[in-house]
Amino acid sequence: MGKDRPSKLVLVDSSVLLSFLNIDRVDLLGRLPGYTFLITDHVRGEVLNHYEEQLSRLGAAIREGWLRETRVEAPAEFETFLELFRPRVLGVGECSAIAAAFHRGMALAIDDKGARKAAAKLSAKIQILETKELVYLAIDAGILAVEEADAIKGDWETNHRFKLPFASFRRA
Image (cartoon, rainbow, N blue to C red; front, side, top):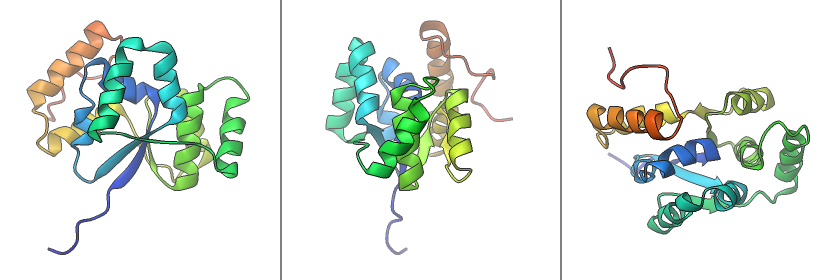
């Protein structure tokens, strides 16, 4: 069939990352065909500073190659990061992920509504993926059964204060 298509690069914010770290299923991201997921050093720092239990899971995900780490250090990226962070509305992880996605032309995995609005205001061209869309991609790829996805949804709602506005991942 020709050469494999290159992976779509996706910058992952803390909100999406923690959804998968909390249930120890970052492998779902790493196994999605056609996608490569990255986190910024700022996102890793948020996990390091606030989520001790998830830190070892993050380390394992990086070692397994399910995630790659990148730094926001190019002057233009850092300038955008500061512009986003100055109002003190968004966290450093959100600001770094948005800035890197914007300047690198990557997709952005982020759940926070305010952060999604800030990214869209910066550029309508940034493709935004929410946690629920990543789960649907895993279902479509055959990595996750609908019943497993619904069990994950129940775990998020019961144990991690993350609610999705639908009853099931089963499509009508």
